[in-house]
Amino acid sequence: MLSGVTVVAVMAKPYPCPHGRCLYCPGGPEAGTPQSYVKTSPAVARALHVGYDPYAQVRLRIKQYIAMGHEPSKVELIVMGGTFPAMPRDYQEWFVAQALEALNRFPGDPEGSPSLDEAMKRNETAGIRCVGLTLETRPDWSMEEHVDWFLHLGATRIELGVQTIYDDVLARVNRGHGVKESIKATRILKDAGYKVTYHMMLGLPGSDPDRDFEAFKEIYTSEEFMPDSVKIYPTLVIPGSGLYNLWKRGEYKPYDMDTLVELIARIKSITPPWVRIIRIQRDVPLQEVADGPPVNNLREIVWDYMRNKGLKCRCIRCREVGRFALWTGVKPSISEAKLTRRRYEANGGFEEFISFESSDQEVLFGFLRLRIPSEQAHRWEVDSNTAFIRELHVYGPETPVGRESEWWQHLGLGRRLIREAETIAHDYYGARKMLVISAVGTREYYRKLGYEVLPGSFYMYKPLE
Picture 1 (cartoon, rainbow, N blue to C red):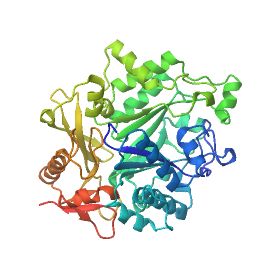
Picture 2: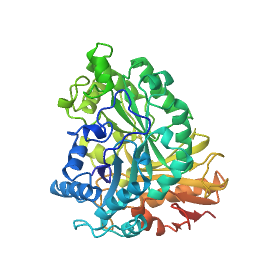
Picture 3: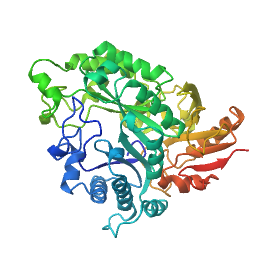
Picture 4: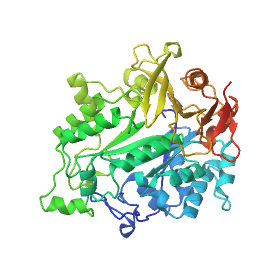
């Protein structure tokens, strides 16, 4: 995989969201799908095929990757479907444990029902390792008590359904929370070491292209927001949603293609180099959409528009070395990687985006996110002497664990980034200990660098001297 990991989406069973239903939201238990999804979406179709069994979903998806010629070794699991943290906690534990066991035992059948701790421990040295666990949730379900639970589950990235930063729009679509919850959740999550992704929607009722553009300017520049990554979702009119009824009555109309492409191009052109635009457009088959962009390659259409206009996107994804090599046919040498440091204030603390990039900063080889938490950090492991490694990622085609690389992984960039982060944390901020929110499958890597699991905690730890 070009980004260095294999992404495996796992769909939880249909379960109602705690606040009810958003205006634009299709699906739900009565439709036999998770909230906000349709049956023909690829991840839902795979889940339906195996009765939403997490073990079977993971095994099926990995088999599909292998059939396509890939060799999955480093897997990011993404738990999708409604508000997962609102489901019964014993179900959540079982679900994550089974997903991990599918990696541990691949391609074998499940054996019994191991505990979450047992599945985690086995995955530390498994042939296919979980190098990231992502949960989708809502801002109002990402408060302190929820974040403590996320850590128990082994999650390392949280996707927040922020959708917009305008309270009037949130109220109009029956979102059930306000902007203040998005601000608070972001701070709590980052102070606990989490990577934070925002889901942002374009063209919601009550918004317009200028408001949407200003919303992105705000989340990119206001220290109250500052997500690490975003998913950009144009509003779709889907039968079964309240929005569909408004549309039928002529009371709502989504953006036309020209407006949408121009808006997304403007957003991409102001995206900071420390933000990754993960997705543009939801993975909903066109036959399910009553109105909305009539294409399934919106990102490529925006790229073409930007090239013709002389615009550039400097987000992480557009600069990844593997994609650069694919698009240009040129394989950048590791000797071209220059250490780069960007510092910014965010969510009451300080962030350092430490990276290896080409001298013109057009190619990104890898990066590390270092955080000095705010004074409001709630976790017992965090004090005024603490620094966090929130993310470490080296790009390029995925190189299996333990194997030498012909590309850019396993050549020491990760070690050098960690060493630089430790130096900055100690010398610049006076930190005396480093915490890492490490997925269970990356613990062995950090152990080789002097880290160990902090007793009674999910974090890995190293004193800084």
